[in-house]
Length: 359
Image (tube, rainbow, N blue to C red; front, top):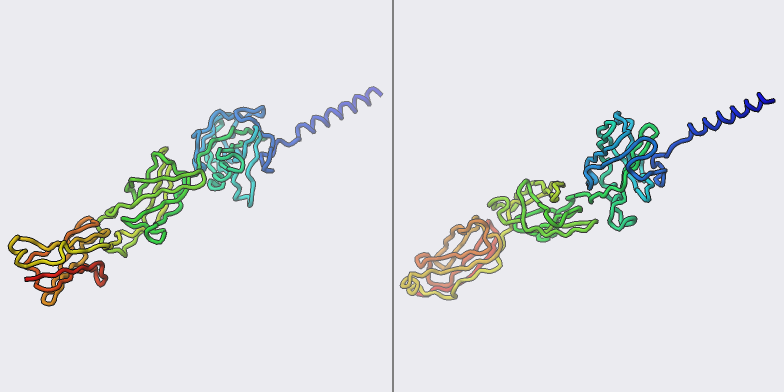
């Protein structure tokens, strides 16, 4: 009887031991909720996390995790992003599996260092800094799993994803086409209000007005009139890259269409006096002055002087696309009568004025 009791005691002991060794560990966040997370740093299962670099990453940055207990075979380390709350970790598993915000690629691995990068940085950005949960503060952390062991990092203070996404031109029906001398509005998010820079095809812009919230941002500016040189043809359009760079060196680039030449217009055009005397001009060595005001006056414009007995034309003598010009006519180029001065480019009339010349 004693031997039978000892036999049953041994069986019970063995059964208990098998139950403990086959009990599954935490599921690594696969249920998207609390899954046995820990407080970051170390844990009793053999993985420790001592540091994260950069300490304030962007969602699309490579992140270096330093610690111990990692597997040097990167294929055997599983790393996921998720929400860390009160030391517990919940991976973000929404939608199709290959589009989960939690997805992370292990780029390289040693026993003490993992280099990882998000496979869904846009979705990570929306979940990591979610107003629903955190009123603008990051809630994201990382869980590392290998060989049945796991560790969870503390919350990582992610910056908003820097994104240059759109361009609008308020002076051209808000079309996504830039043009010299026009206003431009670059839209996106993650813009820093101080120290931000913008370039087009490598050429820096100045006088930026940055308006940025955690959800959306704009950069307003006026493109200098000679930004692309003195190109007169207003139909020439090319693609050029726009690059937005935060003061920490992080940048985002996108290509947009740009017209190379500013749009010329004339808003005012008048003679200095309504009437001139040829004898008075000759006696005083005077000239007739025509004042022209507008935008981006161009050297390929034609100035025509017409009267009953005279018809002359010459180029508009300007450089650098000025907004104002003065046209002068000497007495020798005039004739008695009512004269008209007009400015054209091709068959398009831009401005006209009149004056009278007496003997």
